Image (cartoon, rainbow, N blue to C red; front, side, top):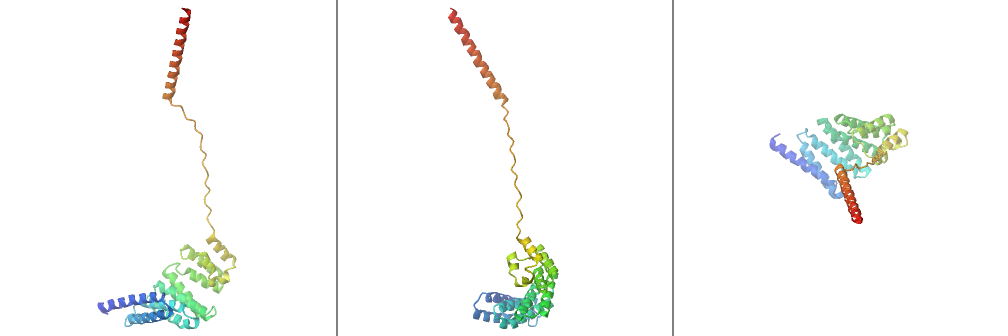
Length: 252
């Protein structure tokens, strides 16, 4: 591919990404046309250049978001297309974290819509995607794995995954976990309630002990004390002199 073709494809890819992003905020009919145009752009980017993992990922991400806005029956095909795009992305670039996480999310969403049994390959594929995500970046999909383990009734594995997610700072807040339908089977389990309590418990503030103020008696200033003594002595001498003079006058 020539440098000119590469620049042209990069520009086309940026346009498609922006169009996909804008479509998520647009009204239904407008969004439909914007998604359609974005998909055409993605197809042009990857045409003749299958090493464009970013294009496959963003294409799949756009499909995933579009699927969430559609009625369940209509969304099934879109989810399937999204999963295919994420699979191509991972095939080209196995370390693409976004494709690993969103590929698993797409599989989970599709599994719920189709109401497949827990041993269905969709759940297994989702688990594989999340394990790949954790291998790329530790803890990035630990909460997702905790959800799958909870659905499968693997309580110990679910708790371990929750704790791993917490320790790595990727855990949702307590309210979101409690409202997560994937956690419905373990909500009454003692270990789950203890874990939630550990998230909501407040750390007691350290008790402040007031320091006793020692009473201090100010030592008198030596210079001031001596001056006062001299003044008192002077006053006493003057009084005595007056008394002597008075007595002498009376005798005369």
